[in-house]
Length: 107
Image 1: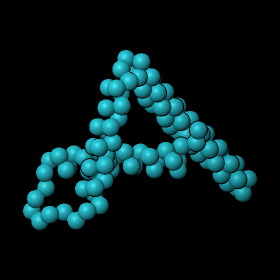
Image 2: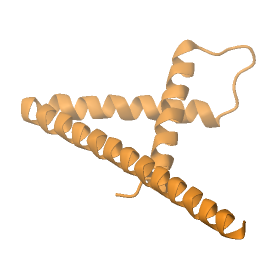
Image 3: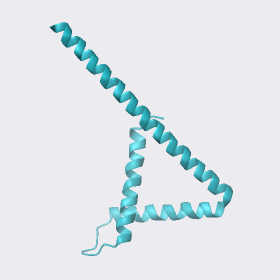
């Protein structure tokens, strides 16, 4: 009976190990594809119009900065605009993605 428990434990461990390995591989492939896509978009945008690329990066930075500013300041009583909600959500999503990639993705 003891041998069966050991064999079952080893089998469970191997199944979990393979599942985690496949999951990590899928996440790394998705992250690499996303990075490659963003790099391609930046390259094509820069080759089309450097000024427009810089302006777009500036607008994106302004959007994220407004979201960060609205996230960390005390909200006004009874006054919350839709723009503030959208920029705060965009900043939160970007920050969460950055933290995930920083701590969990292994490139």
